[in-house]
Each structure stands twice: as C-alpha cells, then as structure tokens.
Image (cartoon, rainbow, N blue to C red; front, side):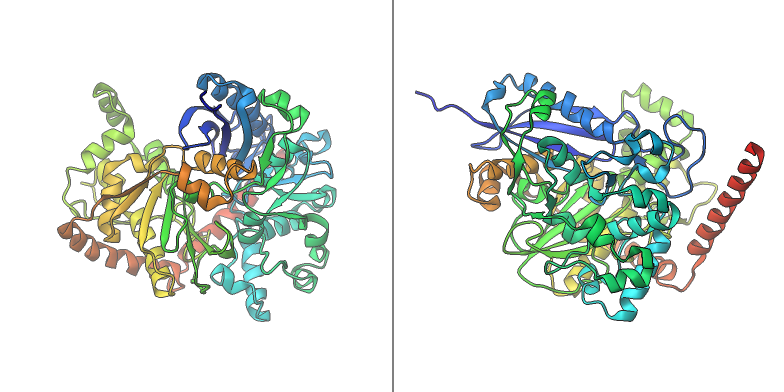
Length: 564
C-alpha cells in the first residue's frame, strides 16, 4: 500500500506581493503556487484616501494586504495542487526584514483604528522606509562614544531601516502614536500572530534588526541618552519571548483555518526573513556559502564558524541562519528597484514600442541590446545607490551617480551600466568579508533576477567566481516550507530538511578570463567613486538630501497655510 503523502505550505511575503507554495515533505517538490499582489503596493506619496503628500524617503504598507495573501493565495495554491487540505501538516512564513507594524496589545495594527487612520506613523513602515536616517546617525554616534559592545556586531553602523531608528523616529515625530503603541512588531512575527493568535518574536529579526546580542538589547541608559522618553522602548514596546528558527510558534487558529481552508491546529513555524530562509532552500547551510537573494534589493547571507567584525555588515547572529554557526548578513538596498526605476523614468516610447513589436518584455529587449556591447563600450560607470547604501557604507543619504554620459549615450548604455554597478557593489561586499577573515568560497544566486543571463554573466565576471543558482524560482517560499516541515517534527533539524528538500545547481555560470580583466579596470574606477562620495571626501549627496527635505517642509508650510 502506497504511503500517504504529506505537504507543507510556504508563504513568502515580498515587497509588492505574497506567494504561497505547496511543497511535498519527502523531497521538496513544489506542486503549485499562487500569488496575490498587494492592492496598495508601497504607499510612498500619500495615505489611502488622502491627498496629503508624504515626506521624502517614506515607504509604508497596509496590513490588510498581508491578510489577503492568507485568504486568497493559500486556498488557490492548495486547489491548484489538487491535494486534500487535510494532508497539509504545517505552515511556514517569511517576510521582508525590519518591516515594522505598530500594534495594540492584541495585535491590531494602529492604522486599522479609526482614530489613527490618517496618521502616517500608524501604518506599517516598510523595510525601505529611510526617513529615520537622522535617528540612525544619532544611535551610531552615541554607541561609538560609549563604546557599546554590540556595535561591532553590526559592522560598526546601525541602519535607518532597523527597529530602533524607526521607533525613535516615531517617538520624536508622532509621540501620541508612540504612546498608543503597545508592541513594535516585525511583520515576520505579526503574520504568525495572525495565523496562531500568539505573539512569538523570532530570533532572526531580533538579532539582525533588533540589536539583540547574547540575549540582551541596548540598555535603558543608552536609550535614555538618545531621548529620555525612549528609555523604556525595549521594556514597553520591543521585548518579548523569543522563538528559535524551525520551532513551532503555535497551532493554526480557528480564524486562520477558516481563511486558509487548512486544518485547525497544524503547526505554524516561528517567523523568518525572506533572505535567511532561502539558504536552506539552496542547500547553502555550510560555512562560506554566500547566498545572494536578488530581487528589488539584494540580501547576502552566509554562515561561518568564525565570529569576526566585518565592516558595514548588517549583522552577525549566533544561529541566525542555522543552529551551531554564526549567520552573517549584508545587502544592497537597491538592485531590481534600480532597473525598474530606469525603465519607468528614462526610456523613450520608441523602445517600448519596439519591444512590443518583437514580442519581448522591456527588460528582455534592453538586455538584448546591452549584451551586444563590448565591456566598457558605453563609457559609463555608475554608483548603485539610488536607494542608499546598505553595505558596506550603511548610509541611506547616499544617492545614485552615473559618470560618463554624453549626447551619444543610449538607453541600453545606461541600463547595462546599472547592471554592472550592482555587480560592483556585490564585489565590495565579498571583498570586505574576505578581508575580515570570513571567506566567501561559493556565491549562490536566488531570486527573480537570476533569470537574466547577461546579469548573471556580469556578476561572474566582476566577482571572478563561478555562480551557483538555487534550483527553485520560489526560494524563500521553499525555505519557509522547509522550516514548516521541521516545526511539524518531520525532520530533526534544518540541515536535514535542507538536504532532503533543498535544490542547488552548482557552478553553472563561469567567469570568462578576458571579461574578468576588463571588469577589473572598471571596478577600480567604481571603487574610486565609491570612496570619494561614500567615505567623506565629498558630502554633496548629504547636502542635497538636506536641501530636498527643507524644500519639502516649505511646500508643506505653504499647503498648510492655504488650507488654513
């Protein structure tokens, strides 16, 4: 008699959509998937139903969009798979990191309460909300002056994307919202709270984004030195029991079972981050395997037996990816977003028309033009800082630069230069890890951008390393499913589940020696620009951001006067 199959659901929450994937437990086969686009996408200009403009660098989301993924994508994926929902034995989820939800004591987002619906600080602050840069700079300055022991664990710099900077921003700009907030919750934990009815804080985001090291957060004296009213931020808003990766956070609640059509009570895994959860899906759980999850941004994660201080890393956490190893994180805050921005804002209509005539997507068309060029033919070098720099400079006041444009520069030239710029940024990260004594021995690519063959060849050539690729187009969702299988007790640990359910295509893109030499010369130019604009020789980018903020405030004052 054939043994009954069991299945798990992996749910991946990205920047613009959520995806549910049905995965077979015994071998990781992905049977079906369904995607739900967030109806409100990213709220950057004005709140829903409002015409009031948000300040620069703001990026918000609407929490109900996340619930819709549970209500629509999960049932659709199960139906498409053609399985009996009763055979689903667990659920795992992942989310963008440092996407923060201010909630009441029972987990209700403040933005869903009528009294706060018109208050921007009551909404979800997406990971790429960079308006807390002034607060991040104060945190860094104070931590350096006090010699805080946790600062080197984050490469010497705390990001404006992270929990403490965004929390301090809320306190100082909207103290009434801060006072009304009972919990400052990572969305990775909030969605698990929605599934189980219980709030469990995951060890991954607590360590990487919540400055929790050796079981401790920054102390009250440090927080009070930032702002006396911030002294109890950890105690009142952040601190909560920790769940380890792969553990069971709770059982599926009756309400969530009704949303998803799945059996009540099945295990729900502790929440995780989209990047970190991808490493087991790519069978990249051994020291030296750096996984680059390349999408709107890129997150680089890697395990190591060594504890080192890597300048500009996002963090190192004991067991942050798999138990028993130190998990390192770095990242680039703009990659696919930059390519998308270029197409949206810099492309003549003739190119769009030609792509349509050829039956190609616009990215495919531009890639087909760019790949005909010799390396350096466009005469351009760009800095990939259109969304700031996450690693290794950790400065979201930095901005994009393209050097070498002339009246002869064509769109495909600019497009290729931006592809190359992101590869140069990745090389800075890899070289920084190598120099710090945390060697990168394999570069594994996951995420949607691995489908672009030109981009992959550029990365192999710039890094002078073979590229391995994950054997799944849905790496984070597969990784979440792997964690669900562990939480359900079907594998003893994450490593064992990864070995059975993960997928890796090893060294499938090889560097071309003559290309490597050509890119070495261009990378040298990139590095000169990188250090000139990013390490204090010319603070023009910071000055421009300050001018832009002041101009925005002037516009707001005028608008307020008109309304008054």
